[in-house]
Image (cartoon, rainbow, N blue to C red; front, side, top):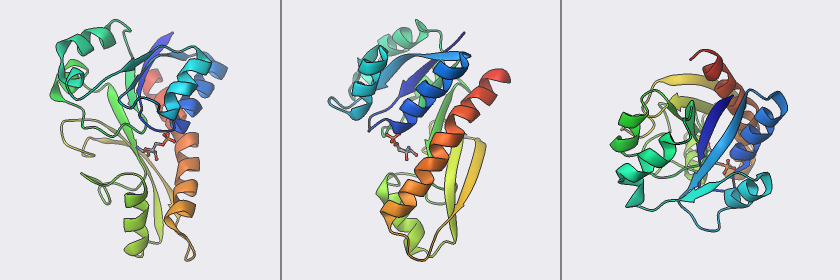
Length: 188
Ligand code: GRF
């Protein structure tokens, strides 16, 4: 069975969607959740699911010891799901083509430093875009610039606020992220 590692530091709804999907189909299991934020919602999800967690900080994320701790789980993929820090080269070098991320907009627009959470949806609405969506992509050493794996679109409605747009985008994320992971596992 494939082993998956999730990096997350937020509420963890994408992590929960991925855990539930693979619990149901049995093709993979989430063997570790890595988090940089004590008290983050995703840690409660990990506890309920009996998944080990690893808290990291600005120093330990760059250390060789982390690479070894991750390698011990022999991950088929490392999945970023609401992980806000830049992934250091120690990790992108150790796990080439194995780290993926989800971004709540249609890259290459509305990506890069500072483009996260509500900032993304505010920018999309302010620009008068008629559609937004999600981008699932490989992670390299530059923010939001790795090769695109999948994009899915949704409309931006005239009455949308950043919150209502975020909700629509989140639904796309929960539907497509587990399926993209399943596709990559089957084709790796
Ligand atoms: C998602 O919108 C994702 O696109 C972004 O961070 C958010 C995480 O949300 N990278 P959640 O913690 O999975 O609910």
